[in-house]
Structure formats: structure tokens, C-alpha cells
Image (cartoon, rainbow, N blue to C red; front, side, top):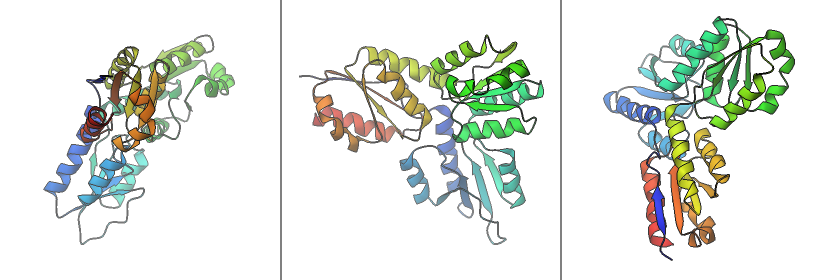
Length: 292
């Protein structure tokens, strides 16, 4: 059986991730005399984190105290950070390089705006995700009326608070599914007296999801490549699983786990999350073309 393998056009690094990775590497090459620390994983991809480590770029959960013998740089990752994180870095004497994705910055600004205008802020997203944590922390510097809800079921537990506040504002984690936002809005319409919504799902995420859905409709099998810690990658896999057979892998090493599915598929579509390097995507395509 001759296989047709199609790679989605918008697969792999988005603008924000590419900017973060390239800038951090450039920082190291131009500041060989300085230690560079990234607070949390720069992006959700272990291969990229290992590559940065080999270049001498440290990924840490907490900044070590500055010493006088060596200048140090603190990189704020693409997901953003709480205001107190910036304060801590400054107090410890670090030079700060803020690589928060510009789309994430916009969500933070909209969230702050809604709180300042007196709205009960609802952030649609995963409560434990670093992007969402940063959005919440920035908003709460201007007021405490903030709710984080990944779905309608969670939001229902706050219905009394929502009805009492009456004025409700909504922002969305940049990598969320548009269907999830629609469900939240449908729930809120009869509950809130005044509802203000900012659809802050980034254009890259929307484009990637739409293109992948169209590819899935003409494929017997979809292969989604990227870290299982990556929100946009896992959302891609969830969306496509509703359309056709879908597998989520991190590298080409995992393809053999789905050997039978691959052998029996005539049309195979491949897409990848925004934090997946081109080299990993290339290896997957190469193996699909040569091994099965």
C-alpha cells in the first residue's frame, strides 16, 4: 500500500517560542562571561531544555542569590511571570531579559484592565499552567476578584459568586480550544448581568488547530508531535481525536508503539505543537517514509 504522508504547514515553533529560544541562545553567545538562568522551562520541550543546558544555560525553579564575582542574567520565559518574580530578580541583582510571548502579554493587559474596571475576572485555562498562573498573579495586583476555570463544570462551582458580582469579564489562556471558550460563554450568558469577553486565544493557535482539523478530515491517521507537558500540543491531540484516529508522540522513537495503525493507514497527517523543534518533526516524517 502506497502511503500519502502530509505535514501541516503550520507545525512546530510559533513566533513566541522561536523568539524565546533564539534570543536565549544569542544572549549566551554574546555574554560568555555571564551566567544565564531561565526561571522554569523556557518552553515545554525536554530536547530544547537539554540543548540549552549543554550551552551552559541554567533552567531553575528559583534564582540563586547573586554574588559579586560574576554578572548574571535572568530570563523570563515565554509563559510570563508574576510581578514578585521580577522584583525578586531585581533585588538579587540580576539583569532581566523578559521573553514573555507578546500574545501572553496582551492577555495579562486585558486581565488587568477588566479587574481595574470592576469586573469579576474569569481566566479560562488550566490553573496549574505557568501562563495562567502569571496572568492571575498580574491581575491580582489590581484586585482579588479573579477565578480560574478550565471548563464549565468548574465554573459552575462559582455560580453564586458570579450572580452576586453581576459584572463578569473573561480572558482565555492563549492555547485553549475555541470550543471550550464557546461553552464557557454559553454558560455565562444567562448567569451574568454584564459580560465582557476578550478572545485571547492566539492567532497561531487558532490557525494551527483549524489547519490540523482540515487535514484530519482527509486522513486515516493523525500523528501529533510534541511534549505531553505542552498545553497547545495536548489540545491539538484532543481536537483531532474527535475527527479521526490520532496518536500523540514526543519523538520518532514512539512510532513503533503504533506500528499496526501506521501500516494500515493510507493517508497519514502530521502536525506538531508550538514548542516542537523542526528537527524532531523531520525525524518523524523521515521514519514514516522509510520504515513503514
